Image (cartoon, rainbow, N blue to C red; front, side):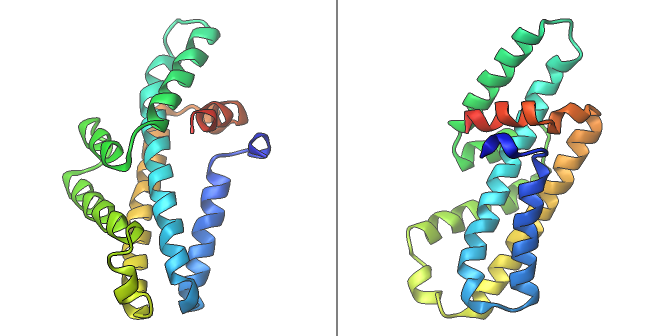
Length: 174
């Protein structure tokens, strides 16, 4: 199935559309699901931005295609093994996110851990206003990361970064 992805942005955009539909239609029963989907989008975006940032440095160097692919594979594997906290730190260290966005991502990460461990789920699972507020906050973070993805792409200026071959290389590591 991964081989059918033509552009890494397609599944991201479909997921974002799904979340927006849930919010716009006020489908309260799906807020909890949409929160998990938003977290997945945020983490995936972080991984891909870091991947782009690290591999583009080699794109214009005079190295063989084989070596570039090896570097891309190793980078993808490295990123695959990074946890959410390390991804956030790496994005800050490499100047991919601002301190403000880093702080917001770190707060979201802590909330995600609480959610995964059901600390606030049991107490708030029927508090749809609370869930909607969390989902909206995550959507804003996701939107910020999409902007960063686009800015990183603009800096790189290489259309091939979203090509099926690069996408497969990236996804192979995940």
